[in-house]
Length: 169
Length: 173
Image 1 (spheres, rainbow over the protein chains, first blue to last red):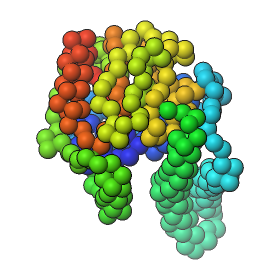
Image 2 (spheres, rainbow over the protein chains, first blue to last red):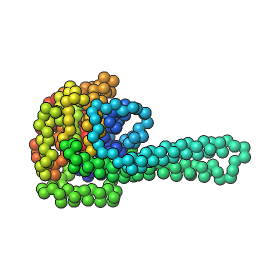
Image 3 (tube, chains in turn yellow, cyan):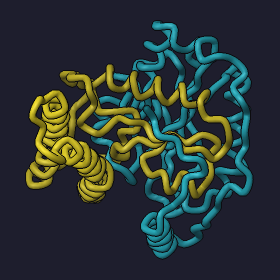
Image 4 (spheres, chains in turn green, yellow):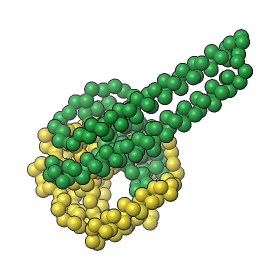
């Protein structure tokens, strides 16, 4: 299970499972057993779908955007630093992805409407199809490289702060 | 659907990231060795998942509170391993000793990195055959992995085999 697939792939493993989650969260968010079970089950099933050594599979789950709503239940206490400014970026990113998905649904609905119309606007249906693809690309960028950058910046600073503060060993 | 990458192709950005990371470690830690697997082992699953005994291994520094903590002071790391009984109470008996990743979440719920409770539930649900009698752990900071390769890895593999494990789920810190 890896959150840094370039390292895993460089070192070489028989079966690699990549999850776009922070280090320390390879099996999901804390206190969310439904999410953790889904990730663990998908990873175990990959042992059967991977057919040759050196294969890395990326799971479709996204940090803080797992499809099931779940109130976290914790066993212990958190001692982590909080960066409010960074959290706002994360929340904004979540909102942008959600709004882009909503916009994509709206465009798809508009296209169905246009195709059923007795008086279609010239070229509109094709344009709507092309723009749906673009919105898909936008979601992909937000949900992969943008999310990766955000996650790694936040986590690297938090790790150094925690180590220096002696709050964890 | 999961995306499958055959022999993960590193982008130039990823190659640079890996190179910079290794250079930083090599500067900061005398004796760092860049070791990669020349040959990747391959063992097809012998049984379906529903009949398999699943073992758990992590480099995330989890260990019993009653056990000797990993050495996070030595610049040469710590290649030793710890054993965690399969019936341990994850909410009270475990702790994490590792200073190279943010384990604040795992301190609150170790299952987000070391999913022993989730494995037990998957057994109850019939997704897996059984949970291995023991889990094994290390602390992943090992600038020179020689002892890890020569001593720890073969011994942990031998123990998993002796425990009747069919499949090992591995997580990093």
